[in-house]
Every structure is written in structure tokens, then in C-alpha cells.
Image (tube, rainbow, N blue to C red; front, top):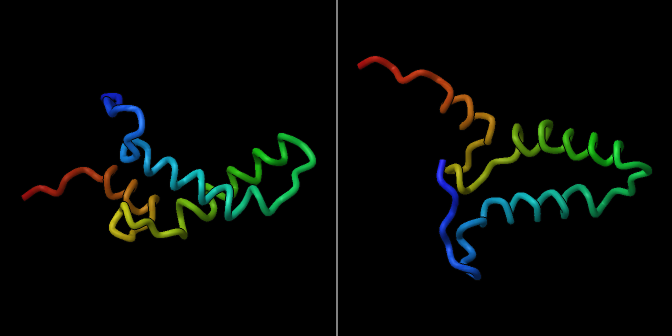
Length: 80
């Protein structure tokens, strides 16, 4: 893995991360009041694992689910 070499102000380097955090904030965190950090952490993990990765399609992944892409990537290549 190689780190990004983009210049300051180049938006394409972290567009996927920016999109993820925007969705997390808008769909979950800003709509909820948490009593403790532990409760917030559990809720964010539940959102990511229970909804974002398994039921939310992503344009950057050709409108597939992140879990689906992950499992396809983990499969050994088929013998030709």
C-alpha cells in the first residue's frame, strides 16, 4: 500500500473518506443525542456494520454493497 501524494487542495485524494464521514454525520450522528462515549461508539459501529456496509449501495463500487465487494475480493481467483 502506498500513501497518497496529492497536493494540498486536491479533493480527489480523500473523496471516499469525506463521503463516508458526511453520510455518517448526516444519517446518524447529528440526529442522535448520546449519554456517553461508549454509547456513541456502539451506535456508530452498529450503523457501519449493520447498515452502511451491508445495505447501502455505493456509486464508487458500481452501486454494489461494500460487504459484497469485500467478499468478492477475498475469493480466490477461479481457475481458467
